[in-house]
Structures are given as C-alpha cells and as structure tokens.
Image (cartoon, rainbow, N blue to C red; front, side, top):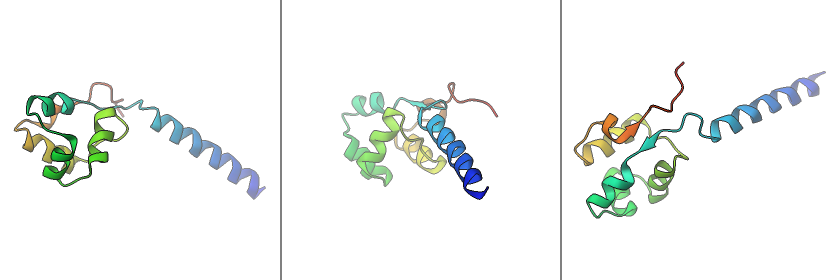
Length: 94
C-alpha cells in the first residue's frame, strides 16, 4: 500500500515539476535589449548585481524567474522600475 502511495505522489510531483518547467508562468524580460543599449555583457551585468552570468542567461531565456531582490537590483541598475523590465502578463493569477 505504501509503495503505491509513494508512486502516485512521485507521479504527481513529476507532473507538477514538468508543468512548472514548461514556463507556463514565464516572465518575459527586457534585459537583453537594455544590455545592448548600454553595450553591456551578461558577465558585466551579473557582476554589477551580484550573481553569475549563468543566472542572467537563465533569466533572459525564461528558465529562471528573478527573486524580488534580484529584480529590484536589476531595475535599479538600469534606472527603471521592476514593471518596466519584467512583463508579468503571461503569469497565471491565483
């Protein structure tokens, strides 16, 4: 009985993870365009806001959503609001 329950839980978790990773709540960003305007590399932006280049890459391609603190740092760096940089229109409401 326990192993059947474990299997069902694992299956539900796997489906949830798959749904999450598909980007159904993908947040689009203007970071690539803003970087190009400033002639700034991903590495330079990452260093300025205290993350790795891979984090910036993941945010730009929609594989990772920036934390509120990181979104704030990025917005402040570009002298914009969070809403001017990140497009939440594709995020499902609760």
